[in-house]
Image (cartoon, rainbow, N blue to C red; front, side):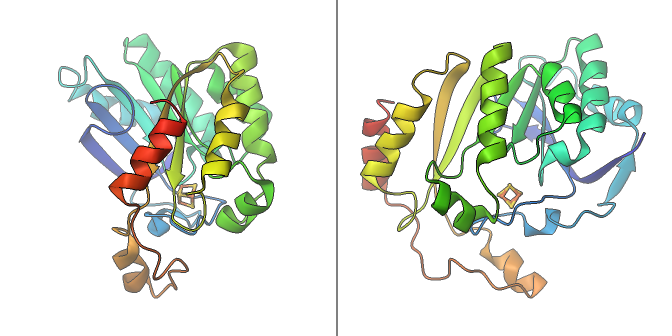
Length: 234
Ligand code: SF4
């Protein structure tokens, strides 16, 4: 089995607890309007093709640095290669390495459930709690994300929710409160991370000759982020 890998980052600090080795897998079925990584979208081979064993070997070079953190697999949408994720995480477990999976929950198959079963922490991106807006923002229905969250609850797999706050879209007190109320019953959720919208990824669109459809939307202000945190009581 071989994974299609977009890139590797040996000292990630923003995708899960501690210092982490971050694996970006190639391919994503969504087209989020604010995506920073449009270069991961296409389903191709990416920059590297590695077996789970080869990838673990690379990770082991950094084992002492990530001892209190672990490994995070992200993308793209890593669950497009769910079987690869599962095999890789099983190898990490054998080595006592903590595993995190950053996913939008866009795919819902048995292979996905098998991968989630061997994941220590899921970072689940909920793009919008409003179904119509979710479709507009990502191009996909929210259904699979909600099925994923229900499964994480059923199996009590530790979960962090991530939510990007975009002015004119998800930056809305009513929608934020709706999300708080929706998430409240889920005991698997350990943390909610509110991420302010920024425009740092727009250069990639220019380079790739793609239209950036949120052109003109300002970055989220500190005041609005503070307000969102108040609504979530963070
Ligand atoms: S799920 Fe992630 S990688 Fe895929 S389009 Fe959305 S932001 Fe980009």
